[in-house]
Length: 296
Image 1 (cartoon, rainbow, N blue to C red):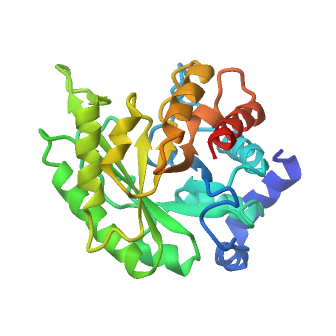
Image 2 (cartoon, rainbow, N blue to C red):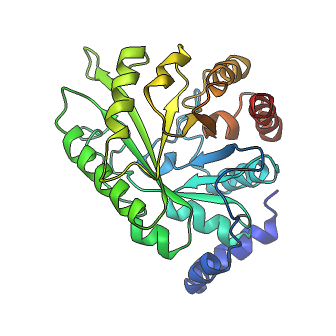
């Protein structure tokens, strides 16, 4: 979908007219509510590259080709069932310059300092959008990642940063999307996501209490094997796609089970939709849309 002429124009604008970004932010047509007419929210996520997480399947550089990434995003956003985008400033601004975000929800990714594989990965500093820029640029909310590792003191500044961001966004009447993920380290020091009910329930309760108010807080959570884990909160939840399993049918089935819970409002999916094993981005997006529609 990204033509040679569009690509050349984007590169030219980037080099010659930086003020075009501010103009594009101001010109974006916003839709009046976060939720669709069916009461759901379906976002495509593209904030992985900002923390150096470029791999998909066996390709460690799958997301490094920016033109290909933008082309895949344009394909996904063209589906009317996709409500919008979750991304860092660079990706948001490129899509704004490509005129692709009118009447879409745009959530700005805030903390990307915990670079994938770095020794300090859990100390996830806020290096992207902040609350003020999200408000000034007329975005619809901010997203933050909270990886909780009891044995890693880097969790502490990340907790504080997330609490401050929740407070800041709520003060401006904007959604704060918190993604709490419990991890441990294995014998080799590698981070391992804990998917058991006890660990997920604990992470949910910690994230729910961040900031001076939870009025604008949403949670972004992995689909639990036992949907009763979602009984832990009254906050609106979106299910994250996570790392693709390599079996799209199994991924869709897992998301579908979680989507039937009353606190769940939708999906936020990144690599699983943008880089499906068969390369059919439009087909992967439509399949996910059908799963969401079936339970809405």
